Length: 154
Image (cartoon, rainbow, N blue to C red; front, side, top):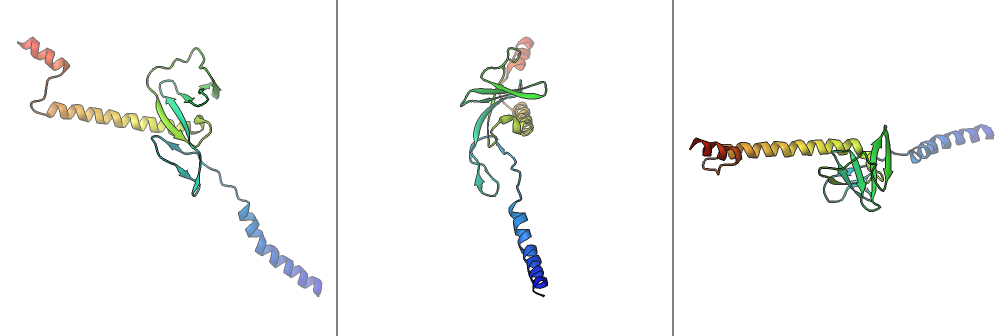
């Protein structure tokens, strides 16, 4: 009788303790964040992750970690890093500064590319809207080709 009661007690104890042990052992995957601009990024329910500053060169798809001066580039489907870029990659055009808690910038590559595309499209829409408003404004100064056309008419 004692052994049956002991087994029942152990079973109840196991059922009570097992869910606690299982939930304590769950590991959540942390998704790196990307922040374009300044400020702090908070992730994982209040645990602050250190941020790394990077530069992204969208024309060639290259990243620079400025502190160790380390470049990251895609070569044959693999990300390579080094203190200098290979000769066939020449940086031209602008760069975009961003911050991320990822310790390697290419981990967040898809989000950086998407964010760059969104920002580029927004700037283009703003530029076009500004040009449209300038054309519609009465008494505005003539610009470029319009000035040339007016000069040729006289």
